[in-house]
Length: 286
Image (cartoon, rainbow, N blue to C red; front, side, top):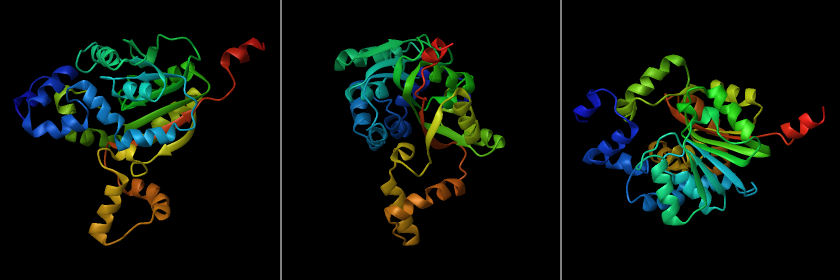
């Protein structure tokens, strides 16, 4: 890595621009969907095994309004809109490359119903019980106040609404955080990465009132494994140990694989739901 990493931390936009110029970082750029043209990057994400797995989770969720918090350059907003959601993309960065400007440009180019709001998730500038779905991709671990962010997510969800948080970094103990940050290639540039204990994520969600319906373990879905897949994991075990794992057995050992793999920063996802009793309706009873 060049001397850029040794300088004072740079902005997120500057980090992405710099990575694009580095021949040895092109795989990371493409894997993170930082490559241009933006519309082609977004289409590749929409066709990815990761998004196909997300579609499976959302298959039974009624299409309606969706809030994409920390929308970045808009690839998730794009995918949600293509799947029939009316999307509000929330992003604190104005950048034309990795922020609100990029999302607006993508929405216009692809003629998609995406409204863009510049704001942080801890204080959402939207009314109560407004969204059928709140979606975040690699966002909770960046929270300045995780508990407050979850409370805001609960507030803006409609009764019965779904909250889906994917690809969140988890550490097994607080002392693992530094090891994770030292090995994260992007953190060395802009200094914005973080990770929480699994317990901390779950406590913040449940304390807000959200019901956790499913914890998606690191080896449980293509969502967390991307750019690798479940097929790659099974092939690894077959090639290394000459073991072919049937699907029904694989599902049973997923939690064990996740526990034994204590890699700092490994990825988890969460599927939550808000109860069906409207806070507004409840208040009207008294």
